[in-house]
Length: 312
Image (cartoon, rainbow, N blue to C red; front, side):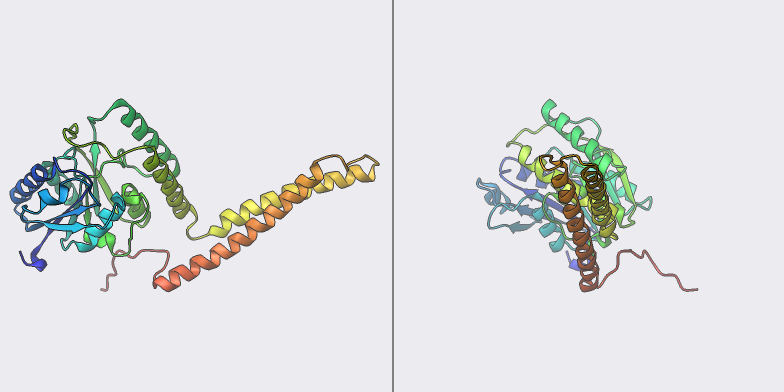
């Protein structure tokens, strides 16, 4: 297929999935051919230690990206996106729990005018522990990020290429891509998709990935709320601390004037500590504000996104 004719790119990260890659590739090819769209399949091997790469070498059509070591799922998605050439990019897991046959459902929803369509594993086939962990993470996400997605952990998603023009992925942020794009003004839809139990290999999810995801969630919360005004967060908090410290010091000063002993009390130290912390937070807010303005300037963009300009 010529590059300019590719309309659909399917990106799949792989890590120790030797028992799944051949069947997964077969299912993706079948699903894409039924759609009747020129397509490409991109597998990204994330430093597998089994025969994943060997089992991929006989597959066609396929673009195989091999990492030198394990860099994580987010890095795999980012590498696949940068390699892809399709107008629409579909992402999915390599464990056969996502069903390639559902790609058509995502594309149908996208035709309604959405820039992003994410899958919702309405009837999950995971262990109870994994379900509880996922639902807890979804609850935290709804509180902090306030998006409208039911299942951010579902890797089966479809994106228009324009979504990634100014987006680089780091940490464990792949599951938050729709939320980030929604913050930038892109429209996000959702469809119910099927979910299958894992039949080969072992799950890569653990508490360490959960902690990384939580830290990334806090980062996105900050960008959603204060990316345009960090001084409001740090400066406002600093003023509260300094004001509290000042009130404590005034209170201690009044008691000292009234003849009460304050040398053995901790409140004067608390007051001074609060004032100093407040000043530091305020200064940090000023520095963050300067850094953010420089960031937008160096990137050659502003803190807004234009969908289109119409001249008449």
